[in-house]
Image (cartoon, rainbow, N blue to C red):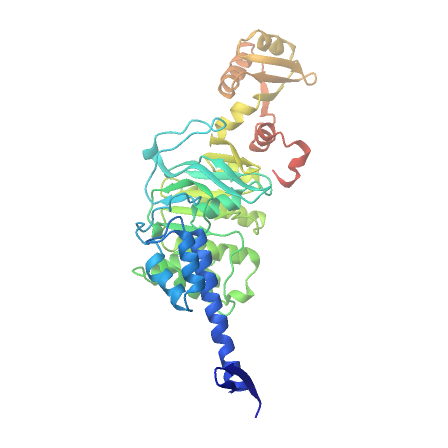
Length: 417
């Protein structure tokens, strides 16, 4: 049998090789414990009884594992109240109640906090070249809030922080809703393929609303248009069906706050229209925050919009206010007959900033505000006794306002109308 020689006071001793092999894991465990304690000591804002340097000597020089255990039992500072940030820590705070807001100069003034279900203050998550920087969000209760931005603007990072799946480096988040009243649907939901749609939603129900019964499961599945597929296995679902199933899982607990990351990205036009109608119907009953790169979808259902660029919130407020602020309201007016008399009358009107011909029977009219144009154009036409064939807004959409605000120009290829 193989043996190992160990020197002792009375000469060499023979140690069986099997025993030596058994000691190796123990030595590794002791070294790992010492390393853990040293890392914990270096990161701790404060320790008890001894200075940090003294605890280093205790961990390294007192016979293992006694030194490490002494530090764990006596040196670790456990006096900090649970849930409060460590002194000097850079982690952001998360509070289930509203907190005072700070309004960034680039963001429209925030309304009263009691109307807000979500507020953030100085929210920052720095990944180096990307992330979030000093974001002050204000989401009114009962609204549909659309979050838009180019790829890499920070939309998913922001939604992940709001849902508690990531932590900010600094700043705070205040959500005036209980933990079980917040539901999240990621951009790419994933479920075990051997489960049926009913089983998937029922599992979600058991986690967030155990008191609800099968009726809630069937209602959620029916709401997203999967009633005919409730008993099918998820493994055979298309990506669009999986997206709908993820939304059903989010709705089964009847949440007060619903967070959706790119909810229409995998749906065909008909499916998108159906889901957007569902989101719009939630207005007033629950708050919906959703991100999208399809600006036409946001304009269709969102009464509030936030625009992110390079991790910074450039604008938040009513969607129509964004369009009115960053676009010159303009219309193409077509008349039955000559348009010169109407054009001259509009040039004399105080609300018109520019009037130019667009053919014999059409004129292009710019106004100081949307309301001024909508009221003034029909009045001038009626005053001239002319007959209006059509009056079409020119470039009065969210995409045009987005490009005007961000200065994205041709770089906005990733944003589609």
